[in-house]
Image (tube, rainbow, N blue to C red; front, side):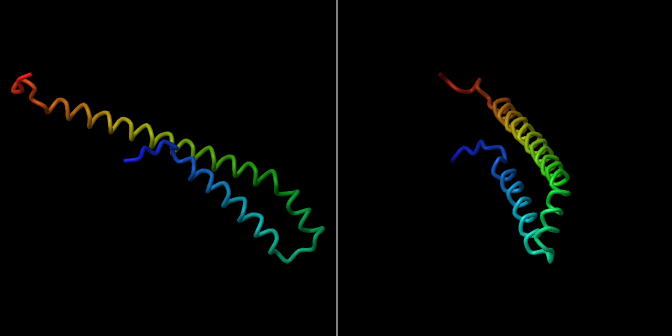
Length: 92
């Protein structure tokens, strides 16, 4: 079994790139002149940047919590498995 330890980094990257691509396509397909489009991008770029950072931070937090929960569940399963073993019946 392969060990996948990227902790959702691919998801975060995909989310980030999708957000950027959507904003660019939306801006380019809007019925505005070049001057209006540049002004629109300039006026909204800080807001978009803040939204991207917020989404990225939220995704990192959720991935971190999920990773910690997975580690704890794995440890509990391992500990429970060893507790269920009856080593007294085994001749070594």
